[in-house]
Image 1 (tube, rainbow, N blue to C red):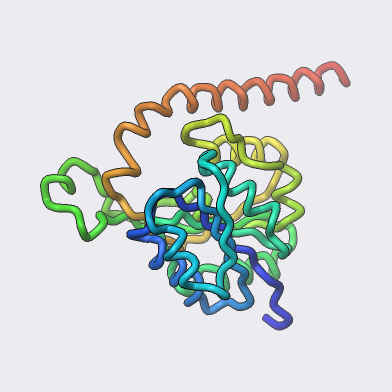
Image 2 (image 1 turned 180 degrees about the vertical axis):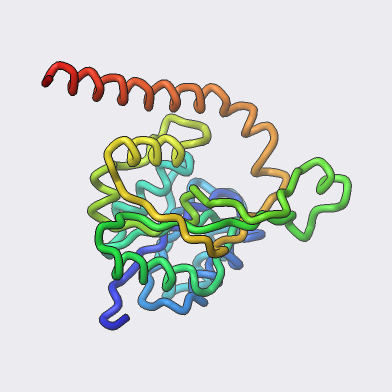
Length: 236
């Protein structure tokens, strides 16, 4: 692989100063170069800004009023200068060869638009046993249809468009559903590409609150497919 293109890595952060440095370091330690790292601070009130700025000039830091993860990712995409986009949540981290494995696929299989990989979930080390027992941690690798494992071509991303910003959770599921409906071609690698941290603030109440959003996403996907089928029948 020669003449490697730039990859833009967008990291949204909201009150995640405890984990942010590990996420950034996992990007800086990638065997793939070159990379630009864009941190979008979504209204944090902790020391996330301080942590991010400590990595300057290796990262570009931007602040926005709290608007949600979808809006933060959209802001990062607007600022990105490369032809490839990758995303990482501030409490997760990558294995060191994530990007190089994915870029190899995109170079060798030009028909592929986006590449995913597998995720290993883990309990954050600071959790005590009582809390760990309340948060289920699957022991096996999981297929990572998740923004943190995706590498996508710039033009393919814009064929789908920005993430929805009105959803409390699940904006990526909604985006991926639309991408599938539009025929964006993806590939799932069998390799472990990302470690997903389980901790007290990323599960539970937020998931219960998001159930309505998931119902809306399923309905929107079904409506799109119904409209597409109707158009096909009308053409026949």
